[in-house]
Image 1 (cartoon, one colour):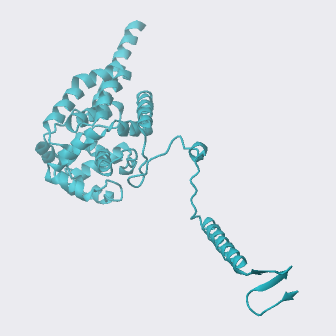
Image 2: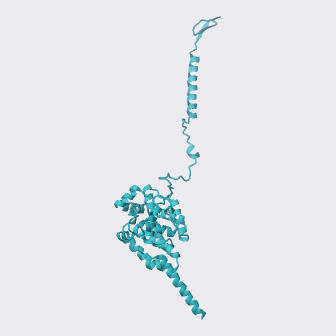
Image 3: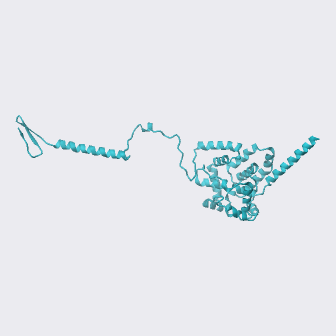
Length: 322
């Protein structure tokens, strides 16, 4: 016989024995199931948002690490190189510069690969000890066809630094824009120091009158090495003459090396000259103040050599013809 009530329990009678079963356990199971389902939903939501982290012990074995990662650039145009890459660049540019000194990319790479930080710091220190050098480092001027008014320089008197500079550019067929930006020196300020050194190179040519031929380049490099201390000009002065003709070596060793060494050591630091601010100054007075001698005209000397050689050969042919 079964009796029902309106409460939350049902009473069963079986063979005179009554038992009472409530809905507590089903309700508890439903609540626990709801919590578990809610937790699953929360974990699924975290997984979808990428917020769920699982520490897989096998990750370190499965993750592929790159063999090489390049450091971040320190300034616009900077290309950071590893020590191995710098060594390769030095070796490649050294060989290329020796066999092809006319190719600018080899000269540029050799210059930056040999411009080591201790040397550049020493040059920077030399600039910081001078008021003009400090001003250059602060203002960081650039020597380009845009920063210099080339038409204005052509209007200056012949005895000025600016007119001497532009006349040399026109005669040699070059432009201030041929000096490429520094890319491989890591420190940003030291990169500017080398950029300034690079862009002032044509001024050293113009105030000495030395042309862009192999002998003139070597002579200016010796002057730079003795005056500023950059390694690349020293290497050029040491190895470049090995491929020259005997007549070229004779002129360098007897005339232009002694001149460059003497002028480089005796003159004030050229790296501290603010060329842009002295373009109207007298060139002869500037040379006297700096302590730079004017070398013999290399083009005239070469011209005279070839004229003498031609007359000598003509005389020998005349004698042999008799």
